[in-house]
Every structure is written in structure tokens, then in C-alpha cells.
Image (tube, rainbow, N blue to C red; front, side, top):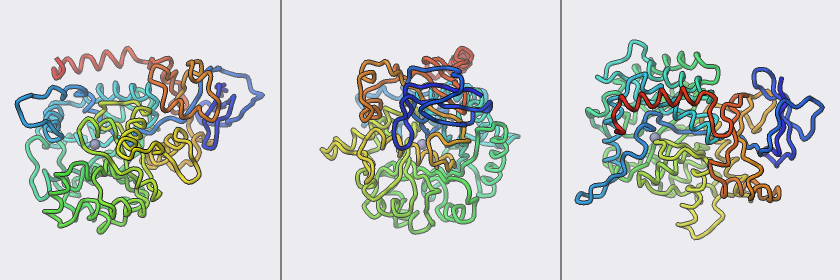
Length: 459
Ligand SMILES: [Zn+2]
């Protein structure tokens, strides 16, 4: 058993100052209180907030972060689709060891930035020639192994990808993503579940690449008759071309079609949902389905801006994800999300609810709550008794924070701190990052450096 002392801790309702957290030998929370009679194991002059939930990741893409930014000046403007070609090129070359080392590096960086759980939207699951691995979940197993090595929680979401576009066969660049049939995908899902058994902080989700990636009637079948106890992830309406193609193929927009053909509820996590018309925004909110927003990636790819103000006014739920990992700082994701809305609305109060007018607290609460659902976790309290202890510490002696009253602490952390002020991360009861260093940082970096050197994509 251990008892930690913090300068303060953000509970669901308010700050507890000072705060004492007692955990058992497994890292489960026994008590959170403002005083304690137990001996202190370690005292931190830090504020602690709940660990962030990264609801959307493609780990392999971390290896190409920053590499798609040189644009020919004499060609048509660069867009999502040219980035996708560069991404396919990388996806075709990554082996199981490569993926494990890249993911280990990435997940340790996520922990350093305060994410304590990641949903891995995993579609590079076949061999380089498109055949199945002997262990169907070989690549997924490496993602779980990477998470285990660094101590982050992982929700493995093996992705059903069948088509190269609405009514189109897959192209050569997509060969590693493809399951020919629903049965093939269900076998992959089953094998993936076995992979999650290898790590106590791993669990499973179900996922469809996109409305263009699987025949729509098969998506509806899987939604209705597939496992009902798993979170259901899908990319949707990220690009305008995808919407035009959907209208041409189905006579309906992607989200419109989903609302008309799937019994949507809070099990569903729609990633991006960038381009919506009013009836779609209203339909998602009314159904209880969640939206996963990836502001740094969406900005980097030039996707567009999700109608967050409207969605929130309708009671919609949203989480954040880092997707391509061009950015992996949750505070930055939330700021980009907020500032995009402020810039287009000319108003400042993006983050609000009827009972909470504090932007910092609200953004942390919403991204946590919908993020937990994306991981199939049903806890209501940030620090629930019996749950594993997850949280990120911020240096309380940073001059701005050291001089800030309680009511403004959450927003000062959200809007006015940077990664250098993050003091450490507890994941599943363990202090895995301290003062910016993961506890096995050297090993992680060595493996990553070797892998990138072999891939030769950055040199
Ligand atoms: Zn994605």
C-alpha cells in the first residue's frame, strides 16, 4: 500500500487541496481525501488531474510525423489524398518488430504528455503481401506488447476494411488492411481478443474503417448482429469527396445513412464527423453516439472544422484522439479545438454545459467521460475507489500556477501551460513518467532509433 500527497487534485466536482491518494499494491485506489492518518510514501508539489483518454490512434503513422510537409510549388495544392499515398507507402513496409518499437516509443510519449489510455484503431493487420499472419492478430499483439512495456492502458480496435471506396475493389496500397468478408473480420476480432488477454490493462473494441471501407449493408449487419458489448468505432465524413461519393453510391450522406440504417446509441464513436448538415448533427446528438475529434491531425490534413458549438448545444458527447500523431499533447488538442470554434464563431465560450461554465473543467470532464466510453470503461468518477490510479501531474511551482486561485486552476492548466510543466504520469497505479522521463526511456529510444534507421523513411 502507498499513500501519495499532492498539492491538489481535480475531482469531478472540484479541487481537493491538499490531496492524499491511497492505493493498494496493485495500484487500485483505496481512498482520496484532503487529509490522512497514513504515513506518506511520496509527496509531490504538483497538481494532479485525471489521465487523458486518447480515443483514436494509428500507432504506425507516428513514424511519418513531419514527413509530409514539403510541398511541390509547381503542382496542384497538396491535400488529404496525397498524404494518404505517403501513409500507404509506410504501411506497406512495417513489420511486426517495427510496429512494436514505433508503438512503444509513441505510447511512452503519450504517457509523458498525460494520456493514460489509448484506443488503437488498428488496420495494418495483414502481411506485406496481403496474406494473413499465422497468428491472425500478430500485429495487434505487438501493439498490446508495446502498451504493456510502457504501462499505458490500451483498447485494441481491429478494423474491418474491405473496399477501396464506395463500390470499389481495394487498391494495391491497401493490401495489408483488407479482410475479404465479415467472417474473416470476425476471426480477426476473436484473435485480437486473445491478444488482449496478454495484458491486464488491455481490452477490445470493434471497428469499421469508414462507410467507404466496407459495403454499407455489411456495416449495418455487423452493428445489429455483431458483439453488442464492445465500443463501435468508425471514421466518418472526414473529407468532402467521401460525402460526394456516398451520395453518388447510396443517395445519402454517410452519417445520414448511418442514422437511417443503424440503431445508434452511446456505444458508437464517430471519428472526425467533420462535415455534417444540421439533421446529421442533431441525429448524432439525439442518438447518444459520441464524436471523436482529432484537432491537430484534422488541422494538419486540412479536413475542416466540426460544428462543435451546435453539437454541444444539443447535448452531444465528444472525446479527443491524436490519430496521425502530428501532435500528442492533450492540452494542445483541446486548445486547437477551442480556438477553431472561437475563430469561426467570434465567440469565446466554446466549452460549456448547462451546469458548468468553467472551460478548463468542462473540457477535461467531457473528453474524459466520452473517452472512457470509447475504451469500454464505465466509471463515473475520475478517481473511483477500486479503480486503477491514473493521473497526470503539473508542477505547482510554475509561476502562473503558484499564484492562481482555485477557481482558475483548471483553465490556467488547460490554456497556459506547456509540456515542460508536466511533472509526471501515473498509469494503472504506477508512476511511469517522472520529470519528463519514462522509466525505461533509454531502451525505448534505442529500439525506436534502430527501427527508424532500418525503415530508412526519415533519412
Ligand atoms: Zn484515423
